[in-house]
Length: 166
Ligand SMILES: [Zn+2]
Image 1 (cartoon, rainbow, N blue to C red):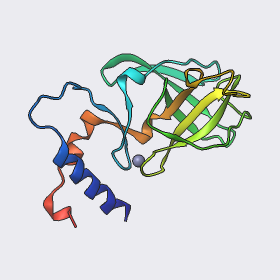
Image 2: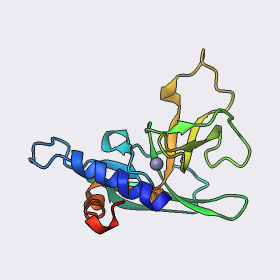
Image 3: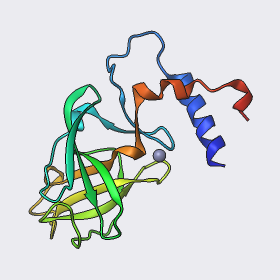
């Protein structure tokens, strides 16, 4: 089911992909690896360091050299490699949690792809977020890089053999 869904979405993306070279955004964005939705663009990237990261390193992402990646472990011992950004095209679930947070003084909200609902990361907002005291500028997101795909890396995946199309 998911496989054929991905193929058909990929075919649509391919059909609408500009081929005349007039695209002004050569880097494209970071896509949801499951459905191809654009989640993040380079101008949204911003580093929010945490002392609770168990490891950190740099990688070129969306043409931005030295983009910081931080590795965190949750209470269930699962590890996540995260990039941080001012904002992203994600849907944050309503409930905010302050326990076991990776960014002290910030609460987290599980965030999913707006199209396929795959879990992509977390939105962080000040604990006791209040719309009178805070704005979206006080929030940021942390995305699981393994759940994303750079658009330029996805080109080869978009060339789907006709025999695979249903
Ligand atoms: Zn998706």
